[in-house]
Length: 132
Image (cartoon, rainbow, N blue to C red; front, side, top):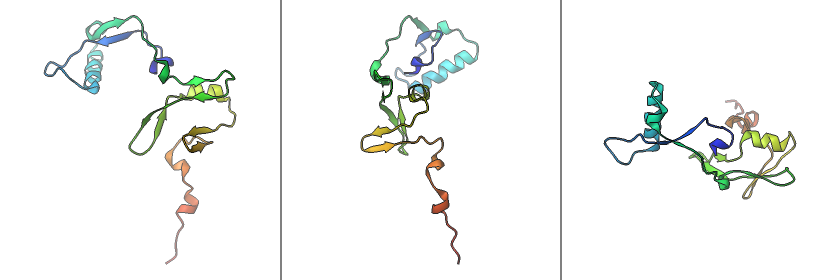
């Protein structure tokens, strides 16, 4: 999904291993790779170059033939209920072209995207000062 918009100069399969454990987390791997590269290390030490990457189309949003509808998927929901979809801002803007839109998610419908959490709350009615 990342490489659909970001075109890397080359891809590598990691050969960096944890000397103490055979199983290590992805985060540990990224930290080791970042530290190696930060010290000016060679990409050849990280691993073999991958000649081609298989695109997984199921994770890519699909635009209909009329170019007026995007079919996407929810790829992550955090502990607060925030939802991440596979529809990027650039695809949304290219297909939407500034027109009105409706986002359908099960039984919910949205016609506006908020930039910040507090944009959704009308503080003028929810925080009234009371006299005492």
